[in-house]
Picture (cartoon, rainbow, N blue to C red):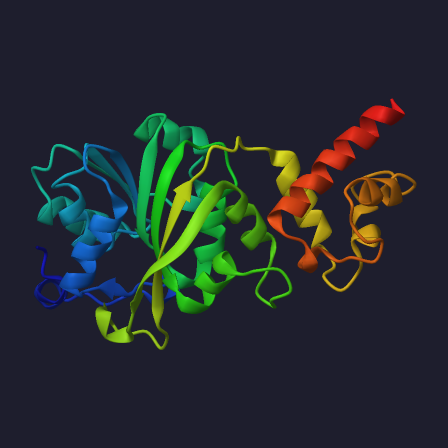
Length: 274
């Protein structure tokens, strides 16, 4: 297993705070995360591999591993420490700027994701993957515990947001590990969670995402007010009624199933008016 602390000392490295770098150094956690990823014989996307602690274990059983790393210095180090790994591709890019068709080209039509996500763009990265037509069967993601709460949230909770609804529509999500600051170097000021996202069979529908994001656009306003920017204002009351929802309801009160019913009602109402 790669000794991250030894590498840091040997190469005189420092974590780049601007990139949210905190290197995972807990060997037991690393092995647990790789096991949770269920990567054996599969194509794996790793985001932000850093010093390669996870990468070194993933390549032992995965069919192939594609690492997307924004830090060029880390990419050069990975090439040195993992030289000779024939099932490893290292890509020096910002994951948020890599188009989804590029990911499909690199990884094939079906892959899994394993990542120690930078805290400051956790939601952006996760939603890039979850709110897409990419064929991702499973995601094993480390993130700040506070961010994890959004993906696990239920209606009426403060942290229930579009991220909660959209990710829960396409994935069953559960927390598998909690990591203390001592699992990382340098130690962050927060605890972390490891979430596993397991894909269901619902086909991706961008209309669902648009509906959810619009419904939450002004959180304290009613659904009726917010949806007026997406549908003809005169149709909105009928859509809400057709979905079996109260006229005064707000987005933060609705379950994933109720949002699905709302989209179905909107489609039916629009069709009836044609």
